Length: 341
Ligand SMILES: *[C@@H]1O[C@H](CO)[C@@H](O)[C@H](O)[C@H]1NC(C)=O
Ligand SMILES: *[C@@H]1O[C@H](CO)[C@@H](O)[C@H](O)[C@H]1NC(C)=O
Ligand SMILES: *[C@@H]1O[C@H](CO)[C@@H](O)[C@H](O)[C@H]1NC(C)=O
Ligand SMILES: *[C@@H]1O[C@H](CO)[C@@H](O)[C@H](O)[C@H]1NC(C)=O
Ligand SMILES: *[C@@H]1O[C@H](CO)[C@@H](O)[C@H](O)[C@H]1NC(C)=O
Ligand SMILES: *[C@@H]1O[C@H](CO)[C@@H](O)[C@H](O)[C@H]1NC(C)=O
Ligand SMILES: *[C@@H]1O[C@H](CO)[C@@H](O)[C@H](O)[C@H]1NC(C)=O
Image (cartoon, rainbow, N blue to C red; front, top):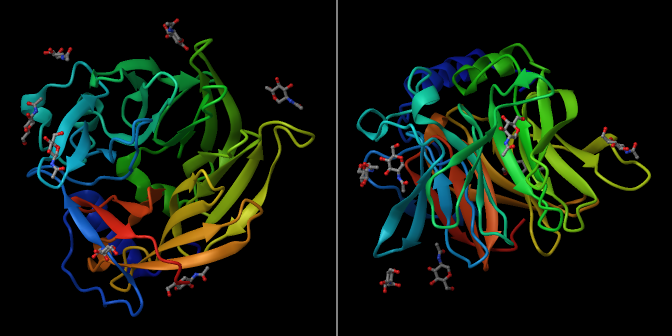
């Protein structure tokens, strides 16, 4: 995003202000992996993330009107699972699009992570705060809305250390909200934070400040480190939780496209959702696979043609398939995992 073309900015603004998909002008990608659409119900849009629970149910996703939906199967489709805020007036909110006025009352769940031991779903609702939902869904409970005396502004990514149960999450900016994401990029904002919340003590901590648009976060299999993406600098950074380098960070990888969510699966594969030429007509959704040492192992282009409104926001590997978050669309993607570079 360092050398942004004016057209990029204009189309980004259009998408941010109107949130309307702009025509299907993207080019088919040679060798791109075919994607099946898991179409959201009518009126639902902008599924940013995907999550599966310990029983293998899902994908779950958060949509622009504040609801958290669960995909059941091809005949049932999606069912309503939860909302982060118990005060959400459904008559106003249901079907609403991302909107700076409605967001604080309707909520906007951007990140979801299940605690596999308790079955609880932890939600980073960018407009409300960190919330928890019981295993059966329904109304969530807001846990915290600030850390270190600074209120959350733009909560974005979340992951859980399944051993310690600590919840790690990002606040993209301390100045701008989701509706002002363009300003995060334009001003090269560096007020983002990496945070943690311990449900056993109800204590939240500020792990890092001064981050450049932090987005996704992932906990390593042994809990010794975290990886998180930074949109402003197109970087992936590692934060050491334990060991001799505890509390320090280092560069993990530099990527070409705009990085969004990041995942570390049971095999230790790191998957990052990126969009090359993000929001230009030539946008290309690319999933990058790294080893835990930061070596690029695979570059998978997905065959989704949605022109300049395309943003790939999540690449989640689950039971032999990719599940794709598409933050500016009305469907999640599903694709077979191939080993093509
Ligand atoms: C879909 O899920 C429903 C509800 O769990 C179940 O009754 C139905 O048999 C499933 N259909 C398929 C095709 O798996
Ligand atoms: C919200 O609207 C959808 C249809 O758009 C409906 O299926 C769902 O039950 C509604 N939820 C509530 C809480 O009213
Ligand atoms: C959630 O909260 C709403 C509004 O306060 C209430 O009408 C509804 O019954 C609650 N749902 C559950 C499952 O508790
Ligand atoms: C957890 O901490 C927050 C403030 O950090 C406080 O508002 C809330 O009441 C606490 N919850 C419990 C259950 O103690
Ligand atoms: C890392 O930071 C935490 C919280 O500030 C502190 O408790 C811990 O001792 C630090 N660890 C090291 C190795 O410096
Ligand atoms: C991945 O593939 C895309 C599309 O072919 C290309 O633009 C990009 O440079 C590649 N990225 C890396 C890191 O190889
Ligand atoms: C995925 O693989 C299965 C079995 O090999 C095949 O039937 C299906 O068409 C593939 N799906 C896509 C989207 O390529």
